[in-house]
Image (cartoon, rainbow, N blue to C red; front, side, top):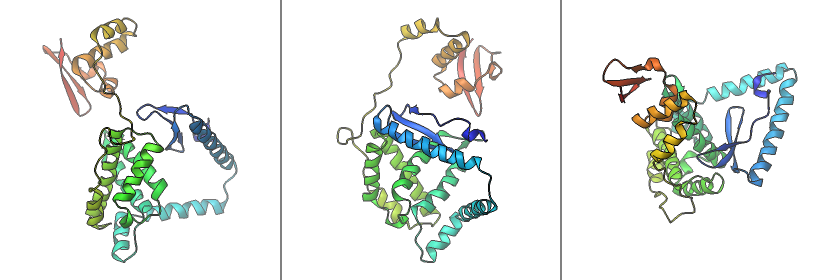
Length: 278
């Protein structure tokens, strides 16, 4: 049996949104506030869905199923930017489900670094998933500021995203419509209209605010260093001196640091971190 069904999907905390999250067949699903009855009930539904799929996977595949899957894959592959443009020009409306499909392909090719899909593509996936949930069969030409405002309400009620994050996610959606307009998949007026919806203002929305990240006191860092493994303590010291991102520190190894000069230089991927004192 494939590793996909080796163990049930885990109930986890998505730290940035405080949501319960589970990964099912490569798709991230938000279940509601972490620890809530709603999230646990939804998790049980996911486990039942996983168990059904696991049982079906254990059954021998029939030629009918194989041919059916191939037909579905072929149909999905046939949906491209060019075919959607031809469809619109022929007078047939483009659905948001179709637009999401081609735009997601674009973002997963565009937002890459060192051969890996970046977190920006993941954030776009999150908001596209919500859009597809509520408006999969809505025509792209009919999705206006009011629909966007209602979807923004779902970001608060269903996902409990913060005000600033919601504004960023709305802008990511607007970027999809702008891209589609440039590709002549939709009329430019659709993208223009969505820009008329103002962002959420502090103190004038139900969306929660997030506490500002502040500097950790030097005394706390010094006291903590003595309890850390030597390698982790060195990582903390380097981050303290360079203000590098955590991901850059974790990807760094001693061979990446040029220690020949008075000032050490660390090369991390396509960037470098100057300023490590000798």
